[in-house]
Image (tube, rainbow, N blue to C red):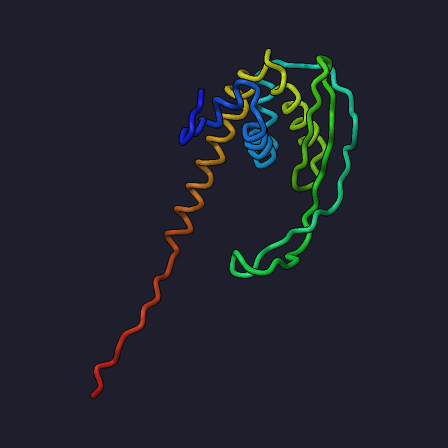
Length: 164
């Protein structure tokens, strides 16, 4: 039970069916994970559901928007290629995926995992065996990159000349 002022652990939300925040977190992790890591985790589960393609896979461009100074006027930054797909698994759950790039196999796998995570019989296993380890790997890679970037940081300062 969550009361006012209490926030729920997103992993707990994902494990009990997810809710909107849990599903957004799960899809974000799956979309950002390297395809080979995702596939390796998937193979370890031994799952093989029947899958029906409902839409896609479709690849195209998505417009990126930015904001001047982070909070000002929006402007068009550019485009990024993206692939989307929607599937239905044998138990009836529908899964969606939209990933950057044109990796159709990864997009389909993300959609299948999304559908399975909505099934209470598989939700906890998906979280434990796929999403949580991938999220940990992404966090470690991010920390490593931040460390490497911090090591090259240059601090500029201004010296005041002592002239009269």
